[in-house]
Every structure is written in C-alpha cells, then in structure tokens.
Length: 160
Image (tube, one colour):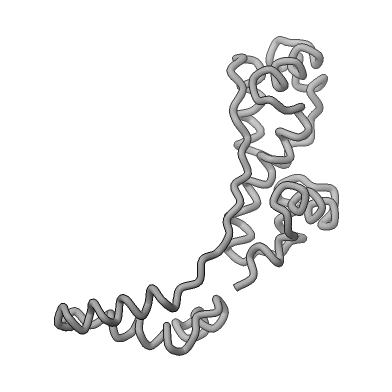
C-alpha cells in the first residue's frame, strides 16, 4: 500500500496529507513550520479510546493460568481442567480470580481475549479471523463481547 492509499484508508484529509508532506521538508524555516504545525493540530480529530483491563491474579496458581491464557487466549480449558495442572481445584481457582481481579474467570478470560484482539483488528485483520484466533466460538459471539466491553462493535471502533 502506498502512502496515498494509506492516507485515504485512514481518513486523512487532502489538506492534512499536504501539510504532512510540507512538514517533511527538513530545510523548512522555523516560523513557517510553526504555522503549518498549528494548522495540523487544528485538523486532527480526537478519537475515543477504550481500554480493556484484565488485572493479573496474585495467587500463584491462578497466575499460572492467567499467564498461559495471555500466551494463548484461544485456550478454552475450564478452571476444573486447569486445576490439576496448577495444583488447585477449580473452585479454589475461581475464588482466586474473583478475589485477585475483581471478576469471575469467564469475564477475565473474555477481557484477555479482547486485549489480544485489539492489535489484530487495528492491523486490519477481519473480525472472523480475529474471533477464531482469540478463541471465540463465532464472529457474532466476538462482536457481542467486544460491544459489551467497549460500547461499540469492532467495525465502528476501528473505523477511520
């Protein structure tokens, strides 16, 4: 993708595109540069940003589960299935997640999946590809989870 296509895809106006090109001149005198930079700032539109927080549990057993899920958010094991691997029962792990993160395991896992999805979506991956990569059963389930956490569907959040 060339620079013009990139600008068009990301909603950069022709004026802003020309100002960026103008400011790339290293020989530009300070006064004209300052005026052009001021116009650039006038042209920029703020975007809303939503963060998806998933605090790590302090309990070492729950933390091992959390670290494994950060490495592979598509892992669909239940806490009962994780228990023997980390030396705790599923109920103990469930209590640890709530106590240490303030949320049940399922909600925490959804947030980890959304954290993993954000850079993929920002990079232009399709919703279907991202949903499969981060472990959602379907694109519609992913879109619903995204909307609940962020307030808008992925297409609207990443629209130029």
